Length: 628
Figure 1 (cartoon, one colour):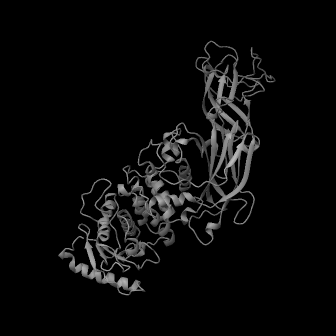
Figure 2 (figure 1 turned 60 degrees about the horizontal axis):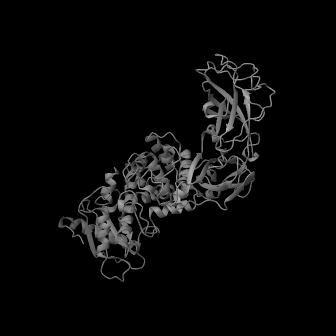
Figure 3 (figure 1 turned 180 degrees about the horizontal axis):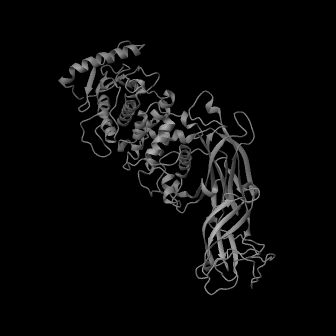
């Protein structure tokens, strides 16, 4: 036990008496509690008051346990990266202000706390930091340190937002929203961000990893109604947008800036987050970030090496991999995500449609096994649908995503068994946030095994509130969805035999536009299949051979057709019209226009965007019926 220095005696006497009166006011069973021992910390003068005489007394803790609390806050140990000399120094080193509104830097340990029902401890303005003796006694070193650091961070939060106590800083938050989602969520996260040997530690019922598991077990809950369980969302914000890249404190400057933004007059948490995003140069709004967060919670379970570098960073957690950005083979550190059951089983030329609902700021995940499908596999969804209790028929807004998963290239761990090939949540695969369509080409040599659809609630009817209230969690955004698969057919709508494409000089050909219609399972689009990507197509000029393959520069889904901008290949010495072939790309399956092989051009005449079809050795004409 560390000795109390003489210069602290007068202050300690006053603090002990005050703490005893607080204990008396809060104790209905034993009355006035006499703290028998005290420890003063060496740097920041925290005073730890505790009882350590009779082990049968509910207030009893050992001297060693009390010393762990003292050292957790402020010690004389030599600091090193990932091991500061106390949480006080650890928070300070990350740029946070000093704790405020804690009564005289005093900590009391008691079994009857003035904590409004809190079981393990609490931080109440103008009172000592309180820890429950029954949750300190016989607990591990890590448990005691973690709980001490958690409560201390609450006093740092108070230093920023005041809670209306400071007359010169009178702003008051929405108490319910702040105490739960922001206060507890960020405090739980920060337990994991200061000490290396507490980063990822889960041998206790109330750790960051356990809160992650709780959230992933039911992601359909309204985010803003959550408390400690929101820690995973705060970590996603930190890792994605913070600039501190040193573990274990990866991205904590985002959390610090968030609380700094609380010094403005009566901000709400939603506004604070969006302001903080802007501070870090992020142009995304909260709804987009929340959608990406929910995609990450799924993609992180697989090998995602096939995704782009930016997608890999966006859909993963550094904390889960301890900073190893290329570690796709390790065991998963976070718990499994809850997927709606049962899994949908699709065989070739089949579909499953249903209606469901999700709370605003919640997410649901659906899985369809498509290994036995051929041709195209896809998913469509639309807000609205059948009405029912708590369901609306129209006006709801959702965001959707589709994740395509194939068999892993390696075995040996859960992450290597499956690999993510594609994530569609924007661009060509999305029309609006009320409607969604995405389709993938099934490659017979390396087929998609499963599709995962993500539905994220954004608003209910005309309501876009984020705060909770009576009955709010019972409101849902309603949507219809379909998984389907089947063989497609492809038709070239332009160029035509009457209006072929001219691209200029054969040695320096220009680009041209081809318009293509794709039909297939009606659930993927009534008149044409929706949600394909330009990369799903291949275009050839002349013959279907590698040397005649053209480059697709861009593409878009326009009024029921796929408009592809194509760079024509060189055709040195060729003066005859060329045939145009469009395939829906699949390694072992080719789909092309079976009505005619369209004329590509006459004599590569420059400056002719279109011309009347010329006769050619390949029989090109507007009424030709040649097959590929």
